[in-house]
Length: 576
Image (cartoon, rainbow, N blue to C red; front, top):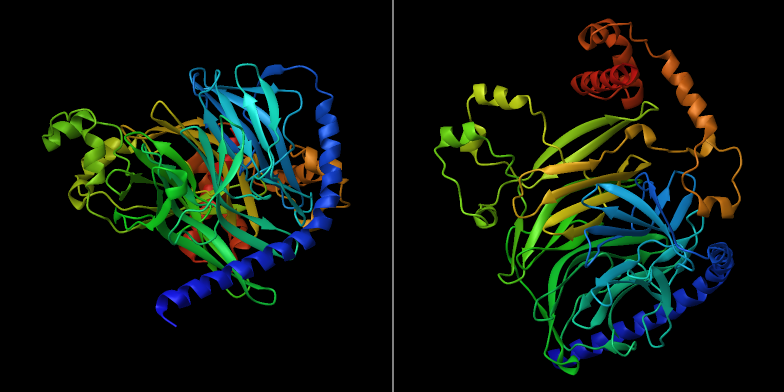
């Protein structure tokens, strides 16, 4: 048999295996989903009691990840929908709707009758029809224990002008899934990939569906050629000509009983063609500096015919644990040039630096080209520590694309001291599964999560950066380490009922609060009028002892002292 025949036979075998696995997953998931359907129905009954639209000003939304953040097509607003939160004991799902005013830097909560059920890991796309529409497909609902999953296959549209939700019922659409990708392309919604998971089995997809925004019908597309392998969480980009570009993503496969192997995809594909029946996949080989392998990155469109990805995590699997390196970098993909390049910050412009370096003002827009053509730099890892209220030290690894040129970094110490007053540049901490949106060339990053050991920190901060200038991040809502709730299993007396767990997410543990308060009373108190340096000198040994007890006896002395000083500083600043 020739090579072509072998490839065709192998392809058909893979299709049969995938079909068998999908049936197997479907059977095992059916019972789980029936249990969760009853819980979802109860929540929908509660939502059905809402009979009118209520919009109220509110504080920033609670911490979450895997929601959707979308730019309003006609207003200077961002729309946040859904998401999830895990506090160490329970998983909370949301279907609330928040609107962020860019001009006012303020949030409002919009309660609309008959919304979609609570979900996360769905996809949302905005189209400028009839005052703006927000389309939502799929996603998942999890039991409070986080061990059972229900995957949605429903399609909803939020009419932004009238503030009404509508469920669109059309046959022939994708199966239930989460982690898929959806983009608006001309007068269609295009959906690719994703996964479906039950308690014991899972399956990843690489199918492509199109939903017509004119006829409200689904069609399954079958592009020719060899396309991407099944995956979730990839980057999906639309070119001005209507072609679809797929990059990266994550999948896993079972290599033996109870042993799974994950794959971080770094390949890139183009799906192009003038007519639906002539679409074909082809593999892309982009130039430039590609992002390091990662999963959980967030994606958005960018100005100047570019797309971007932000953050993510690279998990290093050891025998009995997984350690993740989290990112907070930006990578741009230039669609026209088929080129990757890192988004390097230039920093605020300084007149003194301009005179010293003899630079002239550059024409507007030249900055992007200069940034794109910079030679690749080696990655640099920066380690930061943040101390939570319970004394837990969060060690955050930040991997940046590379240092600035040696010539610039070797400026005189005098200049460094002059600029030192500005402190470290403001930037989001490394994270995965954040929510992104771009409006008027400004990138907004909200929420997400990072991990320290077995503990997960879910974020509720909001940052923005001008993608045209790439000078500096602006913090719009800061992260409060003290607001991080984490309940160890031993701290729970009894599990609350499922309704309370899945609906809430913002309750506080009075027991944990009292423990934290008692812990704070044991710290050396700050005396009236005492300066930070004096306080540190007086209590340094106490904090070093506390830091060592948290970090372990094998921790290096220099790092212990550094963490101890950070803990003392945090306590001092809170006290004064």
